[in-house]
Image 1: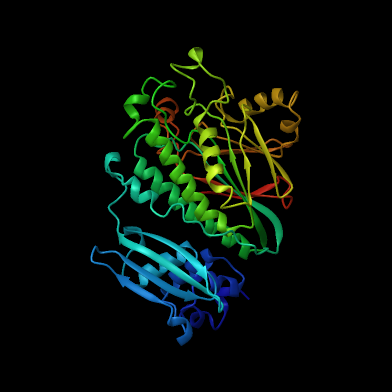
Image 2: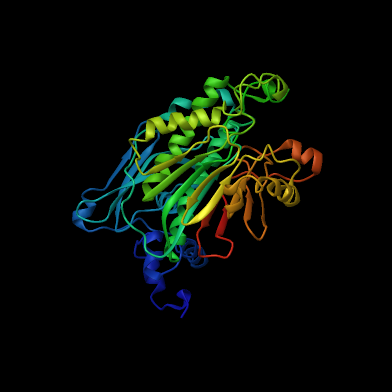
Length: 421
């Protein structure tokens, strides 16, 4: 019997149970529950609680127009549960900004916390008006990683952030895109866990070009970079990476942070590679990863840090699968044929390249994927607002976003469930 044929489905949808908990009860995904709600016109109502739990709930409305809420549930809310709750208080979640999280209730269940709900000003904000201090607020307040073991088919989740190039174009839109993508990633993980995958490990990857740079790579860099030089750009990267770690890591027992060398953050390229002052190891991406490790290694001892010296290919293993990462700026040409030709040279001297089962590259600013038989390859999209150059020269459109997927020995290609976020 399908879920839609259950005689008690309407009752379940109207009893105040959040989508995450209801999906768990019915053995389906949150996406399915939300779709059925929309089909039947049954929005999520505010959760009902008994007297002992409701005593800990709260609702605050501030003079500056912001609101905060605390609600109890048997299971922690996901991002879309918070959006559904916002609708129950008469607001459109697409037209407000908010922060969210949850804490365990010692007596059982969870406290879901929705803070600073306020009308959104839109993403088309001049770069000089971005409130970086507000972005950094509470960014270092960390929740401890879960120790719970998720039963099911053993796989790991990978989240790729590529070509953020912060301070290029519209940095406010880039930041909003990243934060929205990370929230969607966590919802995707909960859906796959509900489907039977035992996801206990996450691999967060900087696939290169986290900030734009100011000069030295391309002639137009000084003209396309907004608000500040390297100092401002690098602080922005640390803020976004720290926010991502604090948002993602507590939901997994094990974690890795992987970074690669790239072209936009090279410190020693004054006027281009022909005038290089220092070598391949001298990049801002690697330096910022080391800064992040210095700050977070005591906060999150479960993170395995994978930071190269001067190697362009970076390797690790997750869920028993050999993973290989690079930015892609050293690969001549583009597409599957160019990658295959490049890899043919790599495997002759690099045993790790030969053994890699899933490759991830970037640099081209658009998503692609192909199966090479011995390995599967992802080309990550860019987090920034796309590539004008690509559209101008080829007519192709570079859709922006984050890439996430599962890896494990559950699939002949060692990877599945890729999503564009």
